[in-house]
Length: 352
Figure 1 (cartoon, rainbow, N blue to C red):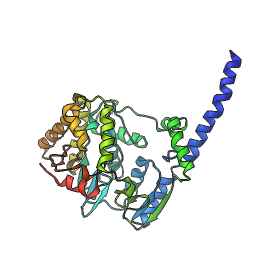
Figure 2: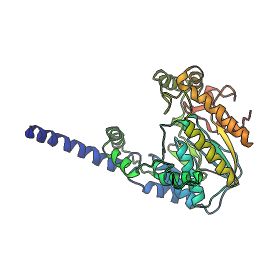
Figure 3: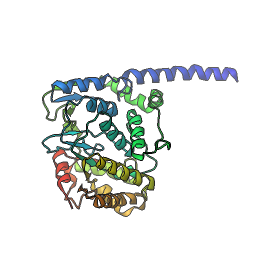
Figure 4: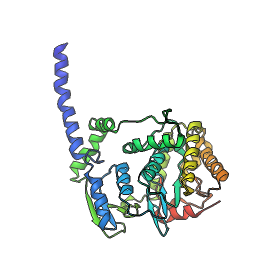
């Protein structure tokens, strides 16, 4: 038995050593090479944009951007990637959104603004239907402490544990041993790509690389655009598998999350911020499923709840999850989850 165990270890240890070393050095999402965030911040100090190739710690980037602001713009836009590509037509604004935000990420963002005393006059908050799911915690784990502090601040109850924290260190360590991350690492190596590539530029137009503008807006590559047929295939595949983004079985909203959302909104208003909501329209194939499948019934309920919350507080709601209500068509989408930059702003301009 001992010999068998020893033989297994002789086989397993080298395999995991290869996986760990490859994941650490290739690091396609820049989990371990945080210098990319510094490069982005430094590049945007002197230039209008930076070109990027790999992923990066968006929470760390947002913290550094907010901390280094030399002035507070009149308007800030926050939320998930539904706000990142939008061609916002505001005179004085900055985009402080992050990919795939959950409700605790909203708390973390407001916590950052308060921590660094960067309170804007106006705030556009993009609200996604899945933030009212109990199962979802924070997406940007780097900002866990900010979310925890803000929840305590909003609850005004220091004796109550209002937030279940995660340890970002352990999450990073898990990726070292991840075989899916290993596949991405190998692909990066085979293609000869440098995941931490950052190139400052004053050209803000679409090009060979994705870009981050000084305002925080993301500029996709031409290759990032999908045809309606490709978007139909991708969205129909999700529907056939019963999973749309993080939503699998979502018939109703979490009462706890609803209360947390209302408390955060009231707290934001108490800071003297003029807040408005933005509901980004969903790709028609998805919305058609939301309307008829009880497993996604909470999406429709979420919009009703958001509008009720807004009406009670005199908050303006822009857009709608319903693309038909806003006059949005399949051709208006960049991909099956995001609207094209100009169409997204048109979507925002719709008010019922």
